[in-house]
Length: 322
Image (cartoon, rainbow, N blue to C red; front, side):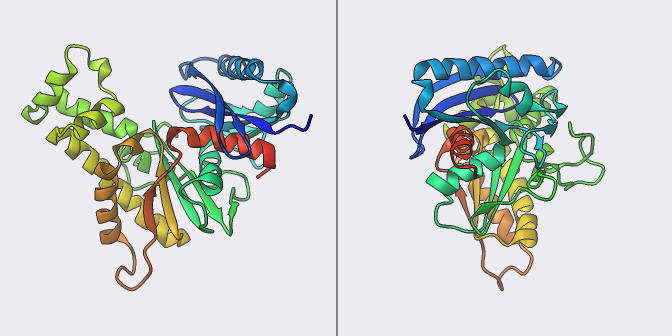
């Protein structure tokens, strides 16, 4: 039987999501686990991946599975086998493909999770038909990826697209990567929640309504909670999202200066806010764009595949080689 399916695994800062994906990008079966805490050993994270893959292989005839693609939230080397550094996980020069291949029967490929998401959007979603694209994924941090002449551009060492670690505020907030003032400290899910917590800690009256909705359990203060409150009309939640959106727009203007894409595709969990995020981002982008008024402007659109883009792209990269 000719393999016609692939398994994609998307590893983020908080979850491991997997799926069996067919050649048209449809997810036929799903599996999900929480990401073990960053202080745990790499072995624990790899055990979690293997659990997901085993569950998915049992859901289908494994002879139909062409390969397993891993989209990892970290710096993946040019060999597409080694995770050089993962700011939100415990991998440091981790030979991930080798370790997993010894435990998983189908061939394993490894790529950056944003590269996987971009490939999915280019093949099946919001980037279809555009040859030059910058993908931004807003989640726990910021991921990024480049499509140049229809191909994922990974850079000389495989680490291109780590836009979240561009310095936008010299001497600014400390980032997990070790530097200060990285873009993801101002335009990400973590930034959104941190700003809300700072207002609560300051006992600011502007957040009283949001705090009342939150109740006594402050651990429930998450990006999705703030987004839902904003969509319901809470003014402070909307302001917090607008702040993140403005920082997003500033970074996109810098990326336009560097890469001149035809389209920006914005995905990740924070993108669920839709126009509450993208409206302020477009405004800031137009204000900050070099040569504004005298050059074409790239469109800024939401990823069409949502949170599934990473696992769909990882699976399709495993099937096609990408």
